[in-house]
Length: 73
Image (cartoon, rainbow, N blue to C red):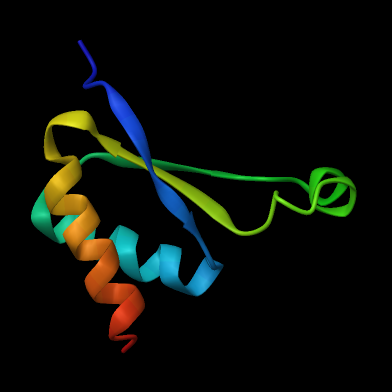
């Protein structure tokens, strides 16, 4: 059975890529959802990439996301 995932946050494409790389290094399961052009044009809140992570590792994933967004490489 696949792990249950929860919303980690909404990020710019660059931050999402960096976070995803760190999540993979930590062995944390994740997936993303990126809105299409129509949704971005019609809904101001649909910017960037939404990341979802393994529910059981949310705290660790949130720490990684904070680190990436505070200290871009």
